[in-house]
Length: 208
Image (cartoon, rainbow, N blue to C red; front, side, top):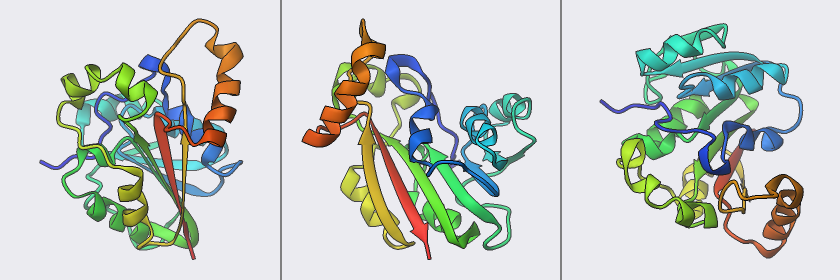
C-alpha cells in the first residue's frame, strides 16, 4: 500500500521537523494540513505557531500518538486526500515524498486542497550532504531502506507545475558534534553563502 507517513523521521543526527519552521514564512495562520503527520511533531510546531492543524497519516499506530498532540488527525493517504478543493491555507509534507510511489500524485493532491493564494511546503532529506554521508549506513537500513530520495532538481521540477517555487537548504553540520550550539549558526551562514549541500531541503510553492 502506498503510504505517506514519515517512516523513521526524527531528531537523531541533528535533524528534526523543526528544521522547516524558519521557512514556513513567519507566523502560520489559518487552516494547515500536515500530510504524513506521523506522531504529530510537525503538527505541534505548526499549532504552536498559530495555525489550526489537521493531520493525516495512513499508519493507525502513529495516528494514535498524533491525536494526543493534534486536535484533528485522520487516517488517509497523501495520494487521496479526503477534503474538498481549496480548503487549506497551507499544506505541509515533511520527509514524506521519500516514501510514496508517486510523489507527483501527492503534490497534485496537496495543490488541489490548497487555496490560491496559498502555500505548499515540502521538507526532504539530502543524502549527498555532509549529514547524509555521515549517516549513510542508517539511510540504507531500517525504516529508510525503502526510501527514494529526490534531488533538488527533482523537487523543483515537481513543484513548478503548481506555482512559483523556491528551494532552500539547511543543516550543514554532519551531526550532533561538540560545540554545535555555539558554532552551528556560523556553519549555517557559511554553508548558505558557499552553497554547500545541506541535510535538509525545503521546497516552497506559492499558489497564485
